[in-house]
Length: 287
Image (cartoon, rainbow, N blue to C red; front, side, top):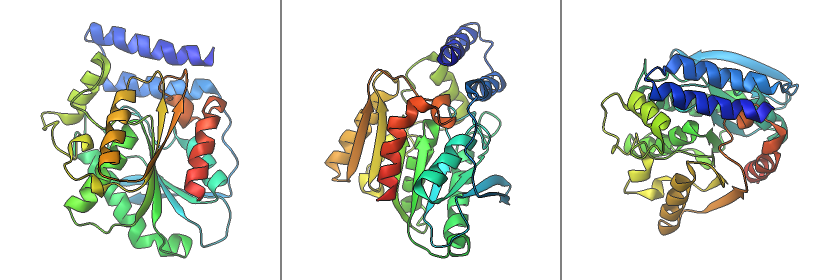
């Protein structure tokens, strides 16, 4: 029954789009309600801290009081217009506990009110803050890991392009992309096309910061793990990205989850159906 709600969300959203009634507010509310309806209790965690970084809400998750831990920067998904710290509370806590890392998550500004490149600028601003303050946060300055799901994966990829393009400090060791989008030129269906329109607001979809798939220099990307769901409409984007990584000789691993559609709220809520994917993510991050 819980998964049925996710399917209803997709169908309703498509119907509203067909009637030109869909709004970002409606989609955000349905994403949030989808996660809530899964009714999964968040894991206990030692401590969380809320901060504001250049006007961006940020939350830190500490699995215990010890120093010397790694940092995982968690960039939430939500079709680039939804999701927030609360929708992804469960997965942030689980990542912190299972990897014994400090997880840092953010609530970036979103389209259509704040179209491209605002969300990416927020992601980059918090990244710069992490790199500047990581010794104070964890007691070390070792390279961090980044996790992004869905639209958050697109922002994680675009961040790496921006680091090279803007000559930002480079301190990312590895990235995990969960059911990733990499290309807003080819949204996949009518709903994603509407979302891409809101996200771009007239900006060029061929920009490497909007669609990191088009960057000419794939050496900007660090070693990664890609979680690919067999029935996900975004699977073709993951496969195309994978091929370009291979040509650029960037180390990567893939995990294909059979008979599963886009995780969406299941990943955000740390639903048991994502356990096999999560275990591979945790193992990759723990190496």
